Image (cartoon, rainbow, N blue to C red):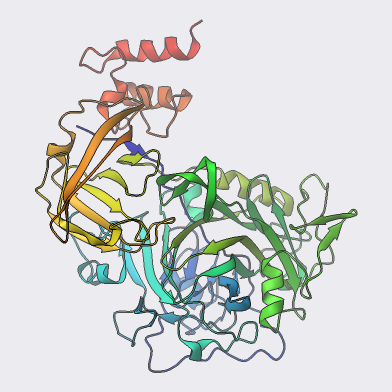
Length: 606
């Protein structure tokens, strides 16, 4: 058995807080949607203690279709729909939220806004522009108990042709206990009508995955969002920024404050006092948004993460700025929006605190009352941003955000609880994975999908010699040529061409390994031919990451939690180790009490 682990990098949400009483800025036009398109405003995620609406045009957190008739659409603590319908639950923690993108094309600012109206349209891009509408451009919803053995309609009609994630057999890839997926883009110039934007399109396709858990722990207070961005337009974009914009109205929207924690890469909203009248009373919650993986930029001495895949020679950008503004100072031009995205004021001035020019507003600690703290509570807006970076034509980017809501005995304890939830890891999904180091002109990495099969992802740079002339159907890996299928997709960051994923039988590829502990390096050879018939060969040493002896819960480390796991397995009917070989610590082929003694000696012995 060749089972290895991967910690899923999670994207939470950029929900800030909202009240059902909140309103957009004075003079804001209501959202206008072209009736010829399939706008999906009725789908929500409600696996845990949060119900939140998610659309297929960049907006989330708002009940745009009036399903519950309360406008705001992020309910906490969620129990059931009946409680919302009968009015016993009308407490929301988000009024409106969305993805903002901005950059320069030929030195001209271009913006894409999801705010009180949105500048995205449903569906993927094709030939450098948006596609005609199709009813299949919607928000797809999966449940952990309605997959292959009990499929719902969205599982059976999963839009792999639109870019929705699939495994080696072409089946939907499920994250969490409930998952939403949608694709949208900003390429329709007729949709760029928000007065905070109103520029030419950037030409970016966004694939958004949103998921949550129904477990009885902190995960019930969490939602994750994963954004994959693809530059499918006609231009390279310079000084590009990605922003998570929110209109936070935490219960009563008039008494909110915001802040950020630069050390923990998060921003949040909290109440100004312990009296959230008419809503959360004396125990108002706090809501935060933590960046788990930012966009990647070149950095020769670093290794970045891109959707769980290591990228040597790159690094992930942290949140590079946090901006806040109040109702009445909303941007009404693209230049003002772009200023906020850079961590500047509305009119382009730097933010100054204590004589220092900063990119982060209110980075102090409200719990201890130290540093730069928000004041004069009011109806807040807040956004965390990443940039600047160059977004070349054909490139892709990836951002993962985790949203968490904490509720303690008072407003400040709620911040502490929220941050503790942020530090709680997502349940681990065991995976086999290997990546090439260093990254050459042609790069590939191996994924195990046991028992279904294995896949080789192979990318090439079309700017390199003959890079665009590879016959993918001819490729084999280390002599194995029984390719089940080939899927072409968009480029990997740093490559200007395509990426092909080839699916192989797993046993033929991995039978030489035996058990893998920690990590090892193995040579692989990809061979085939160019379209013209000339032979093609590329060999590289691949870093194979294995499971660790003693890591029973597959969290990536050997610590007291593994000993507790083993005790519960032996004495209280706890679950067996997910990879039984990790518990065979004396390597005698059996898992018994002697293995526990080895673990105890390792942890506490001298």
